[in-house]
Image (cartoon, rainbow, N blue to C red):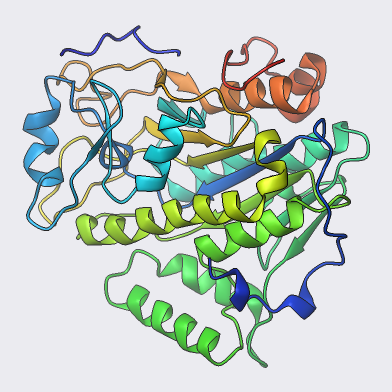
Length: 383
């Protein structure tokens, strides 16, 4: 079936050092007390591999043999035109329960291919790459009584500002600078020789009870669930994960990383049962990848990407966004998926309809000078 361009509206928590957790009272939130968690996958997730557009007539020629390579898990068909990667079984279960919503062909207003500039744009909430405060912090500041928490050793740009925001991460081994450790992990996350070394060191440090200074995604999301389900805990949370830059050997890397993302969602769900019905989790990345596979079994930096919403408050069970097509003439610069939605519109739709942010606050403060950008509609359940 050919896709219609306009056819869409649209775990290890026990390993945490409990003595070092912030002093939040552990009690269920009220039904009206909504929660929002942003998960930033740094490196540029290959959205065409995570959500496979099997109904697009050009997909088979571009990706068919790659996605069906020997040893690859069978894709999980969720609509007549799209299938989730086989490691995203829990996401598929949430989709069937209408609590998971993929948004296709989305990107920040920055449309070039620098990781750092694109991530800055995602986090600062503007059309450019400069700025010293983040849109999540500004959102916290506009919602009276709200608090934010970043699961990170270093305050991420998205959470910097005057709002009531704090950070938490497990302790590092004595003598290890947490800022240096995080910078080195990010720097070498895509290096085929050094990334496994850093991962092995991280694992050994955890096994010795030292922590790695940066939680793996399932642990970070389980920790976020613990904090955000507290009666006096943060209403807005931030989790980040590195290692999504897949220039080579992509199949093995994304098998592991997507399994971790899937486990992270389950860990949050299981740990935040009292607030799950009032929660939206937004999973985003700074850009997509090239439509074609390169000579080293990977993909290079692209433009249009994928975002996912999950949670009991999400109006899921369908595909949202405007699919541009994978034909040669439909691709951006003939090489990657065209971005048809501004990521800020996604965020504005969730903040307006879920957290109750005013349009004026969104247009002037949270996302400055964005009055002309309408929020996406219909992303969350409303009474």
